[in-house]
Every structure is written in C-alpha cells, then in structure tokens.
Image 1 (tube, helix red, strand yellow):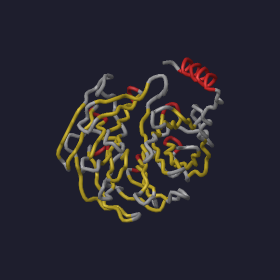
Image 2 (tube, helix red, strand yellow):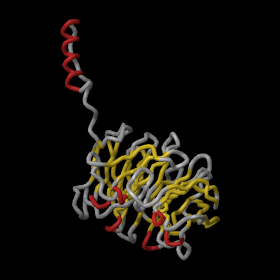
Image 3 (tube, rainbow, N blue to C red):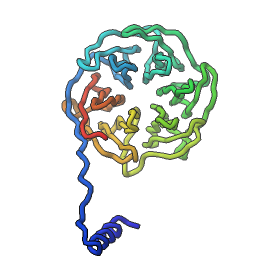
Image 4 (cartoon, rainbow, N blue to C red):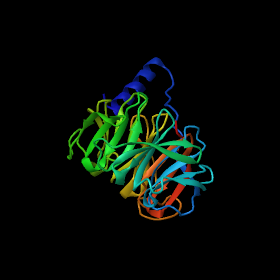
Length: 301
C-alpha cells in the first residue's frame, strides 16, 4: 500500500473511532559543525582510525610513506612511524589483538605493527595474493579482509594464506573497479567501496554479494573510504563530489557535509579520502588539502 493511501485510511479510521489524529514528531535534523583543522603538514593523507581506547588517531600519510599519530582533540602530530618501511600506505585498521594493520599499497602487502601509544614496531608482513591493496579490515574470528585494488578483487587472509578470494573487473554483482575501503558490520557482513562503479557492495563472510548501495538516491562520484560506526551508521568520503555523506541504518542519506565544489575552508574539501566517526565527532582526511579536520555531528540516532 502506498503512503498516501495509508494516511487516508488512518484519517478515516480515526474519524470513525472519534479519536484525535497525531503524527510522530519530526526527527532532530543531523547537523555538522566544524571544530578544528590540523596544520597542513601531511602529503595526501588517506584513511584514519582511532586507537581502541579512543586516545590517539592514526593516519595513513600516503605521500610521506608513513603512519602519523595525532592527538584526536587538538589534531597535533605526536609521532610518525613506518618511514623507510612503508610505500604509499592507504588504509589503517586495528585487529582484535590491538595490532595496527596497514594497507601498504606500494609494497603489495599488509604491514602489521605492534603499537604502544605513539610507537609502532613492524612485526609481520602478509602479501599472499595481494596487488596494490588499498583497504584492510579485521574480523572477530581472525580473518583479515583486503580490498585488492590493482587486482579488482577482495581477499580474506588467514595470516599469510588466502582463505577466500572473489571478484573480477566489471560492474556486475561481485565485480569491482578498483575496490578501496573495506569494513565489517556487527552481523559479519563485509562492505567494500567500489569507486569505479560508484557504489558500496555488501558481501557475506565468504565474499558472496548480498546487496549494493549506490544509484541516483546516493549520487556517489568515486566513493573511496568509509566508516561503519557501532550504531551501524555509514559515513562515506565521496571523493569527486568533495563531500562527506552520512547514511542511516536503512542506508538512507541523512546528511551531506560539503558544498560539492572543490575548496578549502569550513565545509569545503578537496577530494576527501578518509573518515572516522566516534560518538558525536567525525574526523576527515581532506586529502588534497593535506590536512585533517574534526567536526561535531549532532542529531545522530
């Protein structure tokens, strides 16, 4: 039954029963308030992640071939590690053991760091079947999922062995054009940014396609990196629209940050490629402006 018919039937029912008619109160609008920008000391920063305790922010600083560690409140850079070990890192993510996994794109591997505060020590390297990996995420069962951009595939690793592998270049379900970020939701489903097809694909644990988020309703233009928070909200860096888009649990768009035009300043970005949402705070890699931004987001449910 369409919404208009439903409303008319409700009006008639209320009239017959002699009761008043009321509608649910409108939801509080989602608003984004700029809070702070870092110094422009980065070189094309890509994805970023908070430490498990929320006390530090780790950034894949692509052009400097390193990971930078920031104070998430002040955005001051506290330390740098990975120099002379990494080549064009694109993504950073923590696994269940508290290790930092780095998509070490230029070295065709996942670099594994033991981190202690602002210090990082390289302890493992996984490269089985990888070619230009640009996204990495760890599952609770220990599998590590990788967006294998140059190979147009998604790979699940168990240590340095391939557990599952799927995909080919194309636009059909389970096909990709330069897959980038990758993450898991609370039900174990795997989300993959498929920027060449302007969509995000949803897969099962074994990488079989379940759904696709894209099309005119979302109006993506090369969505590269995204974040799934603990409320199941989806925040997407829509690179060539120079915007950040927030989707609710039903994957409806509830907020857009950015004018849609390339720029620098409040609510203006230049090809943003990284986002991290925690509570009411959102951190953004404003990639081509070589800086990190922090916003306060209100009205999220």
